[in-house]
Every structure is written in structure tokens, then in C-alpha cells.
Length: 134
Image 1: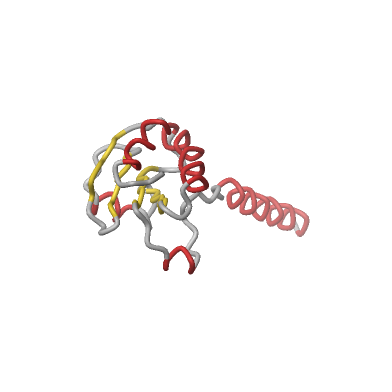
Image 2: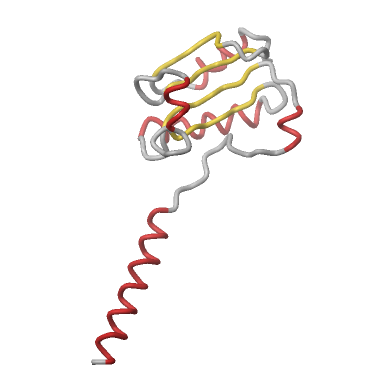
């Protein structure tokens, strides 16, 4: 009987660790709360509203990373996973109907452009250039 309980306990613990490891998700770009980033005055804030579990949203991740690297001092990149409890309020705030949705804010926080769906980097950069990003 003790052996059965021990085996059952080990099995449950294994499932627990397996469940935790399968549920972990990579941290998307644009979620770093670095103090220097908070103090920087950006020309554009690029907000990506999507989910790490959505295929078109996953395709946007390298584009977001590229924009963040190329225009680090001019563009703030923000990602909200709207399929999570923490990200869901942003879906309502920005009134999105589909993901991914990209919202672009000027330096005063006013929305000046919005796009729904996968957004190729070349086209996205044209939107950034509208506000003087070079």
C-alpha cells in the first residue's frame, strides 16, 4: 500500500511540473519596464495588441523586435497579450475587434494610425515616418 501511495505521489508531482513547464510562455518583446525607457520622450508609441498563442501575432514578434532595435530612441514598442487577465483591459481600452491590432500614438499620446492583421515591417516603417522617425 505504501508503494502505491508513493508512486501516486510521484506521478502527481510529475504532472504538476509538466503542467507548469508547458504553461510557461516566452516573454514578448516590448514588455521591459526599464527606468531609462520611462524617462525617454518617444516620437511614436507602437502598441501591439495580440496574443502569444495567435499565429499572425507570433509573426509580428520579430517585426516588433526589429523596430525596437532600429528605433530604440524614437519608438516605444509595447505588447499586450489580450488573451490574458493582465492584457484584457487593453483590448477594451483600444476597442479592438480582431488580433493582431497595431495602434500608433504620437508623442502626445494621441492615436494617429491603426492597423488590423499582420503588418509587414516595410509598411509599418512608413507609418512611423509620418511622425518623423528616421
